[in-house]
Every structure is written in C-alpha cells, then in structure tokens.
Image (cartoon, rainbow, N blue to C red; front, side, top):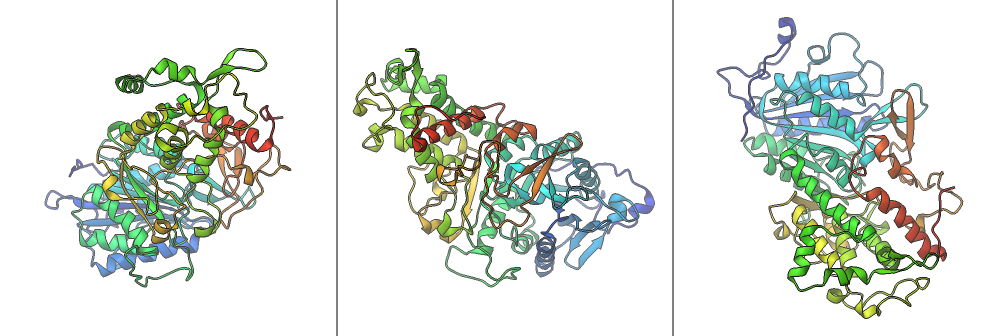
Length: 565
C-alpha cells in the first residue's frame, strides 16, 4: 500500500467548518484506505440515469454501514439546469452538500467538459479527503470521442464531450503535486475500454477499468461495488478493480446462473456486458508495450518491416528471413517495380479477421456493435495467414496477378505468429486460440498489461463475441458502406444511443460533430485533431487507408483503389 503525504489545505477557516469531521486527516487519525471521487457529467439526457447511479451508491454505503474514516465518496455532478453543479459527500446517512467549500457560494455552474473544472475539483477534494488509494470515476462517455457530455446553449441539441487528452491534461496538471496521484481511473461510458483511450491515459493513473462495449443505463455497479468496498476497505488497487469488473457482470447477468433481483432503472435493460482491468505500468510502460506490439504488427503488414527480436527468433528457428520476405514482393503491373504485396494478397484475411473480432453481433446486442477486439483481430489475422500452422491457405482475390509469385502452398508466413506472440506478451494474455467461452483466467500471464476480464454469460456462450480486453476503432465493413454517401459524408446508420448528437471542441470556437456510433469515414483523421497521439506514433492511420483500399478492391471488383474526391 502506498501512503500519500499530508497536503496543506489552503482554504478559508470558515469554509473548513462546513466539512464533515471525517474529511480532513489529522495527526491522530491515519489516512483512510480509499477515497472514491465521482466526476459525473449529467448536463444531458442521461441525468435521470446518473441520479439513479448516485442513489445506488448511497444504498450500498448504507447497507454496509460505511465508515467514513475508512472509505470516503465525494461526488461532483452537473445537471441539465443552469446553476445546478453540486459537490456532495456520500455516506451511509445520505448526501452532505459541500458545494460552497469546493466551488464557492452562489448559483454554481461548471462545464464538465472544461479540464479546468476537473482540476478545480481534484485540487480541492484530494487534499480534503486524503487516502492511501484514490479512485476517480468519470461517467457518461463515448469511446475515443470523449467523456462527460455537456449540453450547450448555442449549439442546438448538441452535447459537447471532453476529449480524452483533456482528461489527461487535467490529471497531469493536478499531479504536478505527486501526492495527488489517481491510483485507479474507472470510465463509466460506452466503449471506453479502447486501445486509443488506454494509451492516451497511460501516464496519469496506475489502473484502468472500462467496458469494451456499450454500458447499460444503470452504469457501473455502484450499489454492489460501494457495498463491497465499504465492507472490505483494506482491499488493494488490483483487488478493488477486479471487484468492480466482477460486480458489473454480476449486476447485469450472473454467470454462475443465479439471478439476484436488483433495483433497475429499466426492467428490460440489456445484459450483454463485459469489462476489463489494465495496469498501466511505470510511466505507462505496459500499455505502451501493447501499442508498440500492435504497431510492429502493422509495420509488417504495410511495409514488411520486422523488429530485431522477431528476426532473431525466426533465425533461431532456421528460417531464412530474407527469402521469406522476398516471396511477398512482386512486379507492379504498371511500373515493373517490385512492391510489397502482403496486403493485396491477404486483403480477404484482413476483412475476415476484422469481422471475426467484432465485440457483439446483432443476435446478442441491442444493435450492431462495430468495435473489434484488438487481441482477437491480431490472433485471427495470424490464424488466417499462417498457412503452415493453421491449415489450407485462403486463396487471394482473383484480380491479383500470381504469375510471379510462389505457389500458394509455399506462401507460409511465420512472422505474423511471432509478431502476435510479442503482442500477447505485452498484453499479458497467452491464449492458445479462440473458441466458445473465450476468456479464461488461467491464460493471464501476470506480466503484461491485462489483469482481469469479466463478461456476461450470454457473451460466454454466444460463440461470436470476443471481448478480450481492449477494443479499437475500425472502419466498417462493406455491408455498412452506403454508396450514396461519399468520403465526405457520414454513415447514416443510427443506434439506439441516448446522446447521439455529440461533438468536441477544437480550439475555442469550432465544434466537430461525431455521429452516434461514429459511422464516419474520416473520423480516425480526427484522432489527432482531438489530441489522441495513438495514430501519430503508430502506423494505424496508414493502415486505415490501406484497409479501405483493400475492402474496396475485394467488394468493388476494381483493381485500383478508391480515392477521396
């Protein structure tokens, strides 16, 4: 357990008098075990659902007779009206309004999308409620698009999201004081368990908890988790994160067959849930390793480049690396120049692997879910392209000239498997294959980033959903391609998504709209616009364009690539 140093509270004495006696640490009172800080953006059409979550947290604290000297829960919530931003301490006895102490007197209104609001809250709450471990929960978000949607007065029905890099900026600013470190960051929003989000937040927290799928309206398991934490406040960070993931699944669908009755906001809410726990590593090293492994895979697909470690491993197995790479070179029909042909020859594998990796299909989701699992996509690519290990080759598309290539039976590629194994080592998941009941705890290595995965019973038995821990934004397949929408248009499909008209600020006065499930051909190009550095440090953006070319070649029947107008 890491104990945090005392931090001087620089607030007026009169304001301090309004704090509960459990708030401030003293020489006689040791630091509490946990402080849970809730940053809830509810200035949107999810206000009722957000209030339900608060009431469930209070219920859990009450039933556990929570000891405020052991576990403190502090909430910042902004509702749909002007002047309704409030700060509360949640205890077994109810809510204590601390808005004046935290934000000042008067009719307080804060924009939850403004990182300065988060900075203000954390700079007040963490010194006021010192603890051995601190968890920050952010509520209502939408994958890499952002979190905490806030209604705007000048943008019609838009809700503006806080970009993920603004969350990182706020935490970095607060953590200029090392005592104000956030040990656990839990994101209660749709599809927040993504490789993009985890990478952006890798340096500002130790543990990361999120769902790779949509989150039902009731949100994270506030009743169960608050009760568990209050009853066992000495649990460490890893144990607490695992408890949250397991409670989440238990609340919606108990995989052991028992179906306890809990308070429900919607009687028929969906039960198809999954959540994962990741350890970031010192300085974000573990998550960076996952992305580096992912990037090395893409480098090979795009350019035939291999890391030194993979070359050494191949040579140790007696593989002639140069010869194996040369077999993927063939003369360009127009110029005669040798070009790398891995993607044209394997474009059907790329598409098939992406489809296999989708987390949730129409049969077990409230709609289509287009975010593939990163691990499953790489594993599937390896299975489809490593013919030597995984059986008969899948022939390339008919419009590829095979005259100067080896026989299909010779096109065996060991490198994709070696690259996958490097990724698996960083990821921390050593699974031998994909099958029904995908996730098994015994395949966690303990050395990588992934610590735990929980998923509902229906995902276990569906046989077509593979939520191993991190999703990734991936272009839709041709089945969702609308020929009436050119590159500059948005996809027209809409999901049953509560706050679909959302956007993010760019600079001071520009809003970029994001469609409901980002059926947007150019959306990944907005990664850098909203601050995500995942694409600037990897090959993902290049691969995105190549994937569209490949998909268009497969299903468009043309030998050229589709160009943006």
